[in-house]
Length: 411
Ligand SMILES: CC(=O)SCCNC(=O)CCNC(=O)[C@H](O)C(C)(C)COP(=O)(O)OP(=O)(O)OC[C@H]1O[C@@H](n2cnc3c(N)ncnc32)[C@H](O)[C@@H]1OP(=O)(O)O
Ligand SMILES: O=C(O)CCC(=O)C(=O)O
Ligand SMILES: [Zn+2]
Image (tube, rainbow, N blue to C red):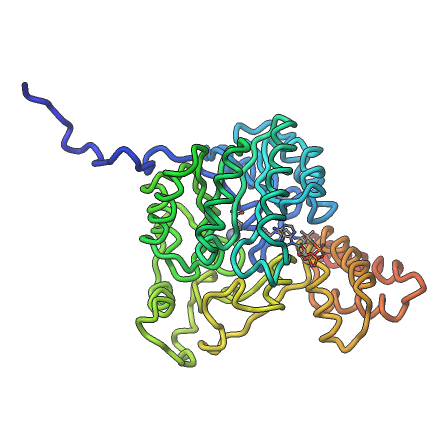
């Protein structure tokens, strides 16, 4: 019997999901971590609607625990009645999980760092991590929501730790586990191997999150699907922490290739970049993009300040570039502010740093603020310790309001 086969049909094996995966669109979470991203409520709504029209399966929004406005915006997006399911991304703690269930989201994505990042980020051991993961998953499931668990920095994590933990959360009924190439160090083969191994171990779905520090994000996402991953994280224009994550459109650049070669130890360059190379650089290029070594969220800032290799696979100094820890947004944390306080030559207790962080986040919730604004709030708080510095903060907000008015009226 002659079997007629369409010669143009894709040649696939039984494991690959390259033609049947779901998109978790993270512009409103990972994208907000991009150095220059400031999304107010109106912009967030426009982005959410546009992505929903495009047909993404999920929209991920910033943690409602990040700031008051982040929480309100999360609720607003949940109430838009979009076709896409709404997810949010939080630390794997009951405190964050309890905030999430009040927002109206369809699901939660939580994570623990498993690699050496543990030491510099949160200091918890595997027993603690496993227990808290199971507790949060059971709680979220009991509320009828979807839950995904992931290990940040999966490719620099101990394989036995990672697989044991994922087997335990799979048994708890988690909907998905995630593999995250947090620092963009993985190669397509490594991604294929890890996801393929995991596919044989867990029955839940598998998600993949690929950063582009060495130009492999697209290839890595593709290989994850080939190995049986079911969900891929993306962002518009590839924006995200440092130089971002996977986008669906092909993007190549010479510096992506150079980054790949350096991490593979094929060449060791100790160069200062020639001037022409610095010109016309795409904004989120690996190594040379202005934000390739910028850290915005509090969790990242804490670990980077403790040990830069936690979130960095390439040393910026090798390329004459500088690392920058942002402390002017609603995603900032108290550890970053404490470091800024020290840079300013001031002394404050941890409690005082936490208090002034709340004030800075409150102002940054309203509109973008500059480092001068952050410094002014810190200095004022420091001066006024024991007295009330809210009036000074009000004056910063009023100044911003006036500036926005000038822009609007074109005066
Ligand atoms: C790889 C990624 O992109 S992960 C997503 C990152 N997203 C975010 O961080 C959202 C924006 N972040 C924020 O608004 C703030 O960082 C917050 C609200 C989450 C926390 O702020 P703060 O309490 O001021 O802490 P800060 O940001 O300085 O430090 C992070 C804290 O979380 C802890 N932590 C870090 N990772 C985890 C984790 N996976 N689970 C639980 N706790 C964690 C750290 O140990 C640290 O605790 P500490 O207060 O005892 O030092
Ligand atoms: O939770 C995840 O899987 C991804 C978190 C993240 O943004 C990262 O690790 O880069
Ligand atoms: Zn990320």
